[in-house]
Image (cartoon, rainbow, N blue to C red):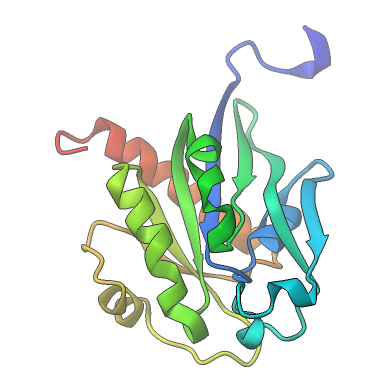
Length: 191
C-alpha cells in the first residue's frame, strides 16, 4: 500500500465560511497538517468603503479566492478544508467552493454579527448542514451560544459552538462537530 493509507480511508470536504475578517484563514492554518494553500493579497486603499475595514483596522491581507488545508481526523477519515473569501465581491466563487462538501463551519465575530447573515442564508438555501462557530477574539464581548442562536434566528437543530480559530484543538473540535452533524443530517429522516 502506498503512503501508508488504509484501504478503507475516506475523504470528504468541509467548507470554512463567514464574513470578512472572521478568522477563516487562521482556522484553516491552525488545523491543517499540510502547509495550507492561501490566496492572500494585501489590503489596499482600493478596499476602503468596499470591504468594511473599520472593524478590522489591523488586517493587512485578505483571501481573494480560497484557503485549502487537510486534516486526518482518524486513520480512515481525511477532511479537505476549503475556506471561502469573506468579501461580498468574491461571493460568486462560493458555489464552486462548496460543490461536493458535506457541511460548513460558519465563523462568526460577535462584534459584526450582521456579517454572518449572508453565509447563513447561503447554506440554508442550499440545504447544506452547517454550524455556527463563534470565534472568541481577544477583547470581544462574550455572548452565550443561545443568545447568538436567537440573534441569527437559527433553529435549535443547528449547532452553535465557541471556537478559538488560532488553537488547533479548538478548530479540530469544530471540524469533528460539523462532521458528526453532517453525517447525522444525512441519515435522519428529515435530513
